[in-house]
Length: 216
Image 1: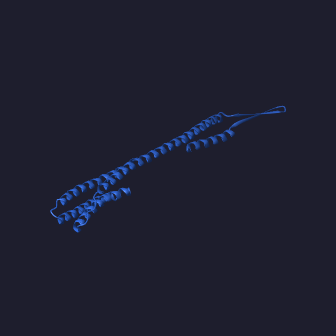
Image 2 (image 1 turned 120 degrees about the vertical axis):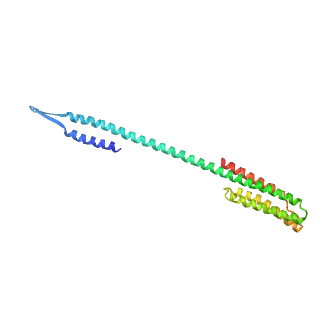
Image 3 (image 1 turned 90 degrees about the horizontal axis):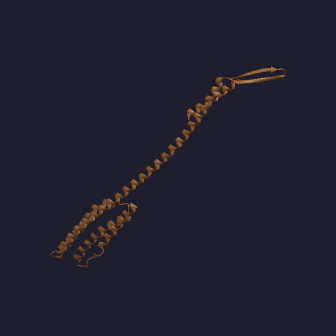
């Protein structure tokens, strides 16, 4: 643009010079006076050069204008693509993190159930009520230990309901084992175990929905 402006300035200067570079001849015949103005060759050449400068300056300006517009559109398109890429990558990262959290918690629940059932088997075959009571207490302790292992993952899950349902699995099994030990000790009715499996199913159902929503 600076080059175009300088060319226009030079053209203006040449036009001024052109106005002063002509040769004027005056002749008188009787009562008639005739004035003839003739431009010198260098003035004519300067005007021709000026026309070239105008054309060149206009071409330079047009090229600069449309090149700038094209570059601006290209940059805008690149920015949009980059933003979409970042959003897609963030979504994939979020989905992967949820999957890893669900898998880790599910593995801990499975390990808890394995140890829980093994200890319940021992309590069922105990020689007396006192031995069975102690084994149920140990079973409740096993559940608490596995719950403590799972808490660092559960607490950072992004979905509140998923966190609640994961905690509910451990709490239900632990409360049942502790309640059974207390019932044996006090010779009272044992707590109902029919709802234990339901807590796991509720957790897995919510986990599947959270993962499905994250991948949508």
